[in-house]
Image (cartoon, rainbow, N blue to C red; front, side):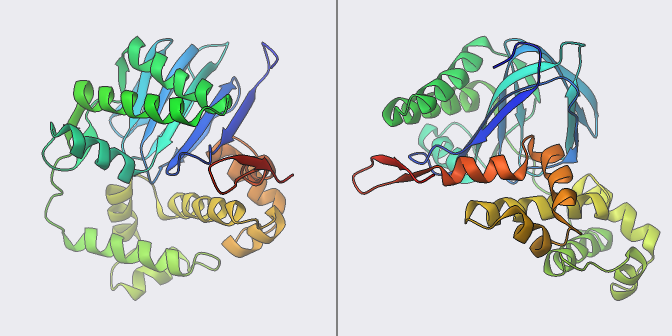
Length: 287
């Protein structure tokens, strides 16, 4: 891989369900405000990453681990001229809950209070998971994954705070989100959505931002990309996917998908179509 150019690989190692992997170097690329439905653990291996949160911007350098809980809206960009390189694990929430339950050290819903920690040992383990998966060593990848998740939970894990009582605004935000999910390909204008919920557009906009960390239109783009990922994983073409999730055309999908996921939809689809698992656990290439 070139030393000065951007590159990325976002893939899934079939023997480890519930885990996505991203290894990348970005210089000019910026991630818009978005959120993940699972956890994010990124080991920065070079340069500096800047993560924008509702509470402000934090910076992560080499040896740091970036930890983001599910549904936390954030941005990401280079914090230095040379950009940043990292290896990232995206385990599903169920994977974290299983490891936390085995440890028995966190009461309640497991999560992480800090976004960036200086933990070279955990960073080394994250990179080791990537190397084992890239070598096709399922036993090592699975073992190392559980070791790093156990370390992160034991050293940095905390129970997530209980959710505050739901207000009328929060209920409207939840109903608006459900309506947008149901009408993802043809969403109503904000004023129409507010009228359906018997509230004002500005009140709904404010409540939605408070609940989900981004306005409805940004949340909708994020939701479309999540659905697009699921469709691409089942074999849909980028052109078919673009229409199904409500983008005007494939270039529109390409632009938003690349910004949020970090790789184009075609590359994302190829990584998941390239390998299938045969009975007995062996792998065979399908493309």
